[in-house]
View 1 (cartoon, rainbow, N blue to C red):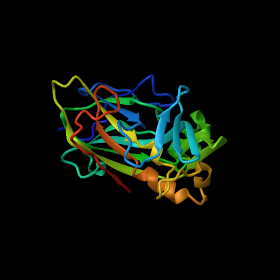
View 2: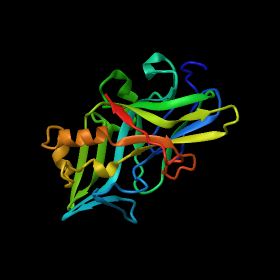
View 3: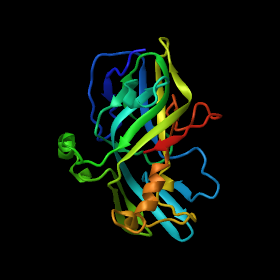
Length: 259
């Protein structure tokens, strides 16, 4: 198997705000999508509803949290081969060097963000970094295109009990998500898709299941550490070739590690 080939990157038109690099084809196509809506809600989780205007709403008791936009900034999104411990071992395929802005889809289903041609092989993980923009000199071009994301890694807009809020985070979070069962790409594979599901409904929830006012979780806020911890454990990845946000292998499980 070839090691760390920087293959063709193609940004999908549906992915607003993303930018990428194109190059020569290297093998079958693998795309990466994002979703925020699990097929079923965990027992005891706040009720999540989809409204006609495309907003996600968390309702718990007398509290109502409406999310109208959620953005992440990612760097070094990589697909890890089965024979590598981590992507630092040079055995990974790079989806995107970044930084890129990801608009998390609100509602059901998965939205494709980037695609890459990968050599045949077995891939057992996805690694990426939630990145604070402006932490290094490589961010200048991104900031020019996305000035509203300067200095932050996550931005969420919406209302809490009728009052508008903007939540931002400066956290830099490295994630390693296991693909179980591993993704097998062969010479006969035409295309495949992995979906990273972000449990957005669980970001602004405290230990007792109550809804947190997002404005209290901004940098220096009383609930910053709780929300950051929720974000760190909110993602998992699975094969999802029909882009419906549901695992193609429902008997399997996937887990993430945060650094």
